[in-house]
Length: 198
Image 1 (cartoon, rainbow, N blue to C red):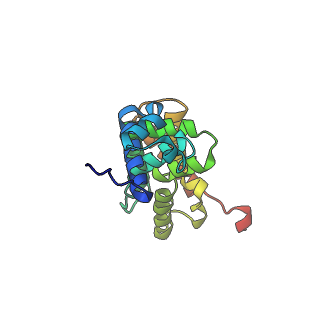
Image 2: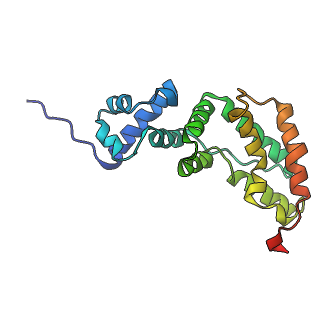
């Protein structure tokens, strides 16, 4: 008489589901991710998945977050060099197979603000840029008024537009330099106090 395998619950089951979803994402992209295939691969049923993630997109975002790694924040002692390194790192990520999955998920998420925020956390949207800008403020390269999330992220948003809006597979380096030299640096070095700061 053979004993049945123990039923997985809690984090053990969640880990199996997310592991299966990660495998599906890396093999087939978000377009090929289905609840049926994830359930079969994880050795569970779709109800177990739907109890944890309400739809395919939420599951895809959770799986992507497991795949993604945080981008290291450069510290060269120079704002321009730091900004270029951050932008080049983002360009490498978004040009990779992992970046293709991220772009698919961002398009699918559309107006789902919570899911977009989760993806942006993983793609290095705000935190690293605020860090390099904060260091530049401390060094006296830029005024403290420049340390604002919308200002800090303008370069990465312009790069994201190259991929999402223009559909480029990778941004040429001269585009990255142009974003930093013609938009980002002039913006942060000439930032006047906001009305609320006057």
